Amino acid sequence: MAETVVEIHVPLVATPGLAARAYQFPWIEDVENFLADLEDRGDVEVFDEGEELGDVYVFAIGGAKEAALLATASRVAMLDRVPRGAFAVVTDDETDEIGQGRRVELETS
Image: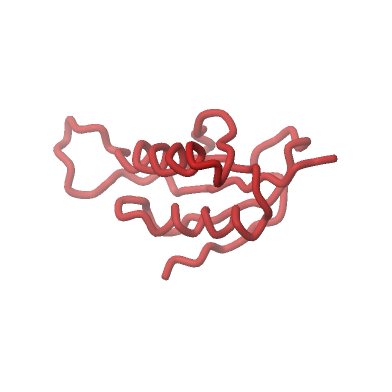
């Protein structure tokens, strides 16, 4: 039976105010650390590494019910340095391509 996966699509936007030579996407590490902490607690399962896909960066989580995964995705979208405009795609672990599924706008307040 297919397991629900929620992809978190974050606009690949540089963090404003950083020095020109600084890594422009420190929010990626923020999200990875946040999700790793949740995975360590057993709240979610993080699938693979995040992946750049066109103008977004995609993180994939599973291991929980859809509502819990979407709540986690909303928490990611609300992290301080994460660019606005993140959305989720609900899919399953049998889908071959990223972004194939139902798009869900994320709560950010």
